Image 1 (cartoon, rainbow, N blue to C red):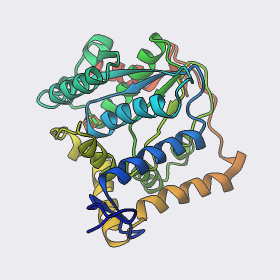
Image 2 (image 1 turned 180 degrees about the vertical axis):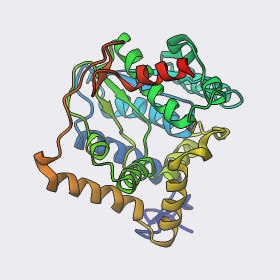
Image 3 (image 1 turned 135 degrees about the horizontal axis):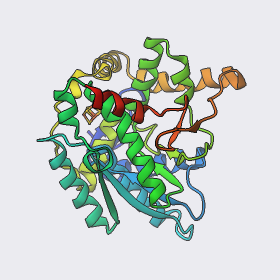
Image 4 (image 1 turned 120 degrees about the vertical axis):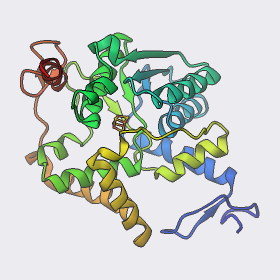
Length: 304
Ligand code: SF4
């Protein structure tokens, strides 16, 4: 099959639009799409120090690579600095491999990397918490967010970039719809600035997961990594399977889920605002109800 833009062989096809792209046109379009998302969301400002959350998986390594490239090629002169933060949750047989990949990509790009671990920050590792009966993805998500925000602040970051792609975003919207959790849906919109919270940016949020993986393959840094042993235990995993089935049957479902959510936000206007955050009385991190989720969970884990 030929590329829709030239005579080269296509490496990918988009079912919803019917277009086919060769490696060169695919990477060019991918990087332009990321740049457009950054510009549309005013995600990067002159003088920013961007901490990139790099787990070593395909999304975060692609994010580090493409941000580094875009900043060098397109935003040159904007004096933006990039560095990586990797969180080691303590998942034996999984995190060790992805940490190696994270170190390799950051090293190859010459980007400084900071590693923080649950063990050092909170005194436990995830495997141990799971053995004691904790729900892995709940504990992992809460402490990872907390660890990233703390590390980003310590390192003077002005933005925290994460590798969430279109599939992740559509799944999050659907999960909250299915749970009827309007408060979380409201929180899921780009956050206004809140004290103590490093603003998050998601430059890959409009790019499908398969294209993020393909970008890594075409650019030559993709390495197959093992799946987290706890991945199949989460609600997200069921929603992911459902969304993938729907996307197969009705191409464009994930994109329309995200677009539909953005339309709902527009219609909701000021009626659906994010709460003001206060400081956790134990650790000082931003929180909604006086005690942050990480401190609440930490107390629970200690008492079990
Ligand atoms: Fe953490 Fe769950 Fe992701 Fe594993 S699948 S890394 S436990 S959030």
